[in-house]
Length: 89
Ligand SMILES: [Zn+2]
Image 1: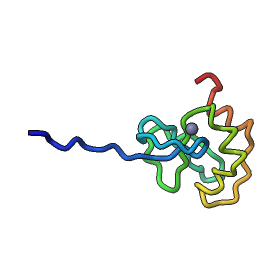
Image 2: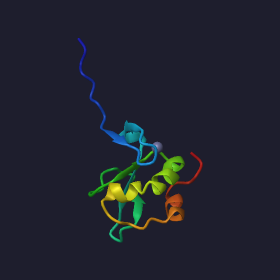
Image 3: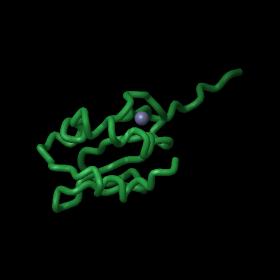
Image 4: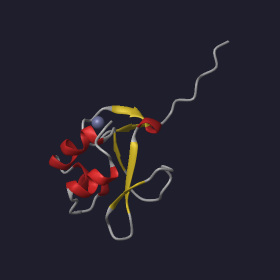
């Protein structure tokens, strides 16, 4: 008998567009000041953006993917995002 394995929720990286199980991606949400922060618990309310890691940050910023993901015209400073994602990944 083969039990159906539970499929983990799949999310798309806003940088490279790769689909991955949610647990492998970093979730970003906006705090009350509309600034991005990492949602390490992945349970914060509101819209989230998912990212593989620091390597996808640039691409995501260039594509304005965060604005799309958050449905807000947020001004995200790349340098600030880099502090959330230490470059070595
Ligand atoms: Zn990616």
